[in-house]
Image (cartoon, helix red, strand yellow):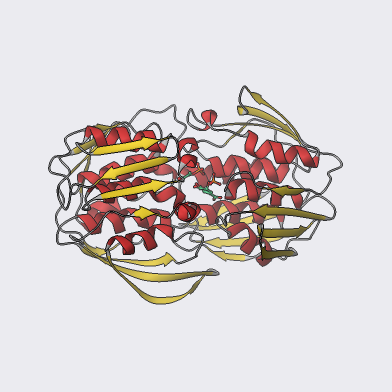
Length: 448
Ligand SMILES: O=C(O)C1=C[C@@H](OP(=O)(O)O)[C@@H](O)[C@H](O)C1
Ligand SMILES: C=C(OP(=O)(O)O)C(=O)O
């Protein structure tokens, strides 16, 4: 999805009870990392279950441009012939990361301590997002970056020829910034230390250890202190990518609000840095059974049975839970519209710098569908209208944001009248089989 293509309006109407099994695709965060760490290893990394969403395909293309050999063998089955830490070559052309904040920020970190120059760009959404949060800590290694005003793409990054190791306390809870600094630290001599006050998704730490890096995490008063020893030789791995809990959120939430639904969603991550939505839904009164807990691809997962839940109650979501459910607030605010009472989401200003300003996009879209919303810079409050109570009948503007598009298509499945989205084309960035999967469960989603 380049963001230059045709908008694809989509409409969803009241759905039949959802039933069946929702097999969602591979985790987006782990898929990006499998390609990037594979490119940093010496030898061939094999990946199964890779998400073939546009964000990840753009990262695969970028790894090729930096000199790795990336091969697709079949659906989700890929291999990466890595060039080793510090082995990136200078790309011959601009790197287009499309819609992906994770892709561009992690790749900038990866090349930042190699003496090459690369220019990055993306679609109209990505070109609005702040890159200073990554280029500021990268400057401590000796990396230089030249972008547009406000640290926006397109941006040229000049890798440090003689990088210094860095000690950096994250000013914002961001796994992308944490990962960019760790990836840069791979090719700096000595120990690079990242300190995070609030824990964010820990896939980079787990995978770096899996690829053979020396990395420790100490939990103390200042938070997590992550110490990486630079210049390791990364060993190629076999990576089985687990299913994406952020994608699973859509069929799960749809089943909670569509009358009569009873579905199964296998292999949903229970990683404590990713499961905030599921904790929140249970606190609201969702009927979710977590069955068959086990390890898959180095992550703890469970099979979910999810049933229509007419007794959902609005709650105050604890603000310190935000990093573990940051991408799930849009779909949570849809569920909140079908609960009784207010759902209060505080400490969520990071939502304003995602693919769109997600507080504004959800507030305006839900209002267009008849809901009452309150918001401030850091807060979103949804006044619930009870089961089946959202009037619908509106059109949501998606602003090149896949999660906004999917959230409103789920809302339309349970609202009184149809809900339209102006553009469903960004859904391919993270969940290319969304429409077919949801309609297979009983949804009524169609192209507008
Ligand atoms: O590291 C990652 O894979 C991600 C981190 C989060 O972003 P931030 O680091 O900006 O919070 C999240 O929103 C994004 O979808 C994926
Ligand atoms: C924020 C997201 O992704 P990214 O930052 O990688 O664009 C997302 O997928 O919700």
